[in-house]
Image (tube, rainbow, N blue to C red):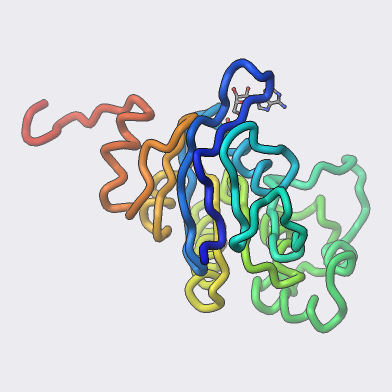
Length: 232
Ligand SMILES: Nc1ncnc2c1ncn2[C@@H]1O[C@H](COP(=O)(O)OP(=O)(O)OP(=O)(O)O)[C@@H](O)[C@H]1O
């Protein structure tokens, strides 16, 4: 059984233009998948479909073997948004935010695991971008979901924060068998850390091991290497 399966998945916002067209891919338990593609490629749209916010206009998506039309076990899925959309003076501390989704013991476990304990009583909005991302990840994993979706979790973070988050995602997939889907524009980070790359631009251009993904990705992004096969 696969954790996520897209079969000839298509989606259109306006009934005319397909934002996603004939998308096919399968994700096994414990896999760490990097989703890449140009701006407007349909990556976030794909997430919205997997999260049940949008319905496929063609084909289907299965979660844990069940057609999404009939899927009800949403607590098996955790979602990490790019940022928390709250008022500028939103006063909650990290602990208060975590207590919305976890009991005292679980908060302690999460804080230890993510190394966020030393700022747990600080106001969320006064934390750095990297610290905020870890808290959002903490909220998403509080209910121990089996599938985690992350929308650009390392955007705008420095190299240290990027590595910390990626290392945690690697650990969640390798050691705890969580399945992780991560949208990212950071090709270096994706190619170095994931099990498989899903390269999408309306349809799937590449789905497989990172080693062989580079040519397709460069083509898709219109990047030309200075020297290829010895010729400039
Ligand atoms: N609510 C909406 N209504 C109509 N069109 C939309 C809506 N949301 C997104 N789109 C369009 O669908 C296409 C795909 O958008 P999507 O946000 O899925 O791309 P993306 O790959 O996540 O892009 P980015 O890398 O810029 O975040 C774009 O052309 C976008 O303008």
